[in-house]
Image (cartoon, rainbow, N blue to C red):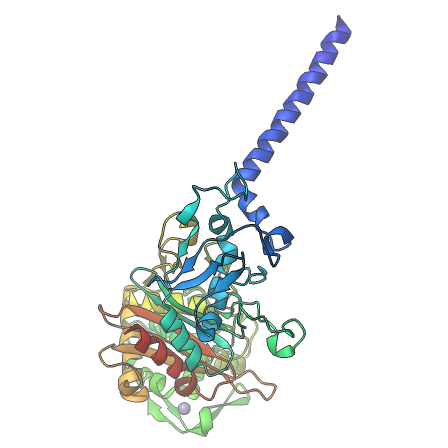
Length: 453
Ligand SMILES: [Zn+2]
């Protein structure tokens, strides 16, 4: 009797382990089956003649960005410029661009479900199609205005969160893969989406952060602070110079931001102090792990521990070791435009894609947002020239040129937004090795806004 009792205990234990295992697999299959089935190493899926037919991807106007033809070939939008402009948003046929919709929403596009797997079912139909919020025409206009340079362009509606323009370069035409794609140095980093997965020296766009730190340090008197600039000044034993050695004279914050005076902001940063500047930058989203849906965003970085006065000065003008990510800069501009709260960007309009949504983020106080709006508007009207942008858009902006060394031309930035109910657009533009903030990045921002007008 004793033996039988022991045996049944063992059997029950084995049965429990078996059922537990089945349960675990079922849950895992339901949760992750789609992802497993769509991995790039699943040759079945990404082979030239895949038996899995992915659904259609369209832009906000219904233009087809990707579809599968009768021969089972994955095809992309009409026209090479459109295809290249939307490469990192849509993704590639081999699944190497892991941040593309084709990869992120592969389970949905394939009609995958845990019961039938990847087998095509007649009832899957148009449920496999995905409509994006992007505007193909505006993406192509931004891409063209980049003039063959590498970089990142983002424009979104800061009220609804709709991403309208999302362009990353370098890239390639997904319908005609270059033969030397994996060997030619010109294609290095080609699978990386610079809007999400890269951070760059911000240069003068970081002065917006230094301004906010000044507001917090001297809430009642920051507007009256003045510093004088002779074009270059020794701070912490070494010179900090303005672009082209321009002497800007005695200036207020408003004037110094318009002139993008390095001497002014280097001295301001030193009076604010490293700790306060770093704390403000972190409040505004630096050193934070942002995600776009399931995609981790490359962090904007600042680390001022142990820096000397000269390094702090350079940090205050967005040099030293400071880095900025375009997606984060877009959020910051969305917050400035929207009373301090950034509406999270989204890429899809139709349902079932809630993973791409997240809650609002407060990056600025209402007062800071209002002050930035005012200062950045005066940058455009008094310094850059209203004529750069389409009429009536009421653009507020800040340019930047981040020096990268190695004899390379600077990272040219423009970030900003339209202070307009009719045109609720915020933008972040980065052009690598450009000629200037206005000339390179400003031209791209203007082209994208004109296409959305
Ligand atoms: Zn100056």
